Length: 279
Image (tube, rainbow, N blue to C red; front, side, top):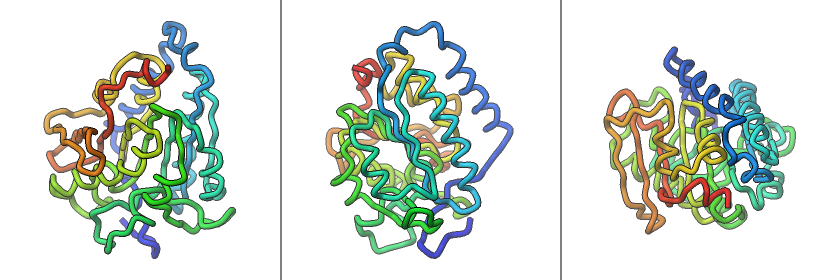
């Protein structure tokens, strides 16, 4: 997978019949029960912010998928703010994201550990946004900016979709990391977001995250149960770990297809329920 001069890490473009089936299943799940769950009224007015950073020729596809998530959240009564490249600047994201109950980011991931050292908190484990309004150039705003300037609602949830590194994975085409490296990546990527008011950070490198929205708005499941409700779950190689960066929090990785395909993760207060989130 090509890497831009800024070192931007592009999420996987892997597409299979299995993935198409998963997305279709998730869409049915998300739409099929609209008239049967009283949780819709409970969640009305929740603030959902969806950000798409610049990802070159894939940007339009990322926006297409983001708009589907926006429509799903609105169908549950949420107030949705969409911030899409080439207008996804740090100033706009910072301003519109305050108080978000759900924050969804699709774009480049620049995590740690990675081949692009040395580590520094100003660019690693955050967001890849437009360098200026109207520009297609990518600029990273790392953990330092996320933890200090984004103030989400108490019990909020962060969803990182189609990033490299965030779920433990490598860049597409660069092989697969060791288990210990994957754990460090999930722990590091979650650390800044878990200091924004968020209680959980989901990362999905390939598949749709519509199941997370469904779980939050339409069920009373725990964060852990929502994670395992993903139609793309595998569970043959899943494991948990205690966070080093954010003590008291727990992470789960559920590798797909083989024990080192780290495409799904969650970290945070996994016992928090969707009812608590809606409350």
